[in-house]
Length: 340
Ligand code: PEP
Ligand code: MN
Image 1 (cartoon, rainbow, N blue to C red):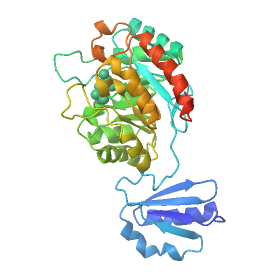
Image 2: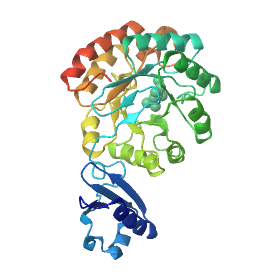
Image 3: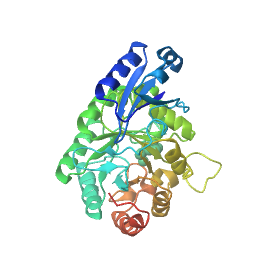
């Protein structure tokens, strides 16, 4: 339920109403805007009928939130959310086009430092790299674990780039929180609800990737789990879905971008690396992502993709990344955004 207060309502009026909402066992929300204060009440809305808020002198209007994902929905929060990526100033949303780049997996200090220096010189805003890798095969490289997190932190300090890394289980949330600026919850864990709740208890940003067989509404419901725990800093990510098509690793569903923009206030980025699986297709689909309204991209870059321990085929050479950034530098302003 959304409760819009009259322009002259004071903080004391808002507090009185919030207390009444809380006394019914509903979750009260306080959302001050530039012209009006909006209150929210989450939970069983029928409970609110007993309050007859429509008769309150400071209440201008009451609306029900129809979407099942209340906090994620644009109905509750009409303006775009901007998510800050750590203390170094990187942010996603609100007219920026943010570029997050780095290897699929952290392999060594030398590999990550080399990648970070190259992407920074080309204009990237944040560094990615997995220390815990969810691999299809149990025999494939599983990541360096805490040693990888330490490398991420060291490289972040040296370059000033905020770092994003994947967390694959609840038990690792605390340690990842200690080293990284943002969590990534991967496609395979999009509906790991306990993991979503655990990252929801942090205040660090969460890049939530769409499951490969998940509908847009499933992604939005998954994001609701994080927001419901009190963490509003969610960045959604379209990374391709499974279809009958085999020419590419996945089918990058760019329809999802404007659909999400209509339904949610959360920023949304595109992953053309996993979305295509082919390095030659990454730059064109990054440009397509920008054109359809994405707030940024996350792409894989490796100094020697042919020797990468994971996802080498879709990893860009640093020179390709640099060329892509130059193309984006001319495209993004035409789209009314800034290259963050
Ligand atoms: C990754 O970013 O390397 C990754 C494993 O992504 P996804 O969860 O989208 O497959
Ligand atoms: Mn990968």
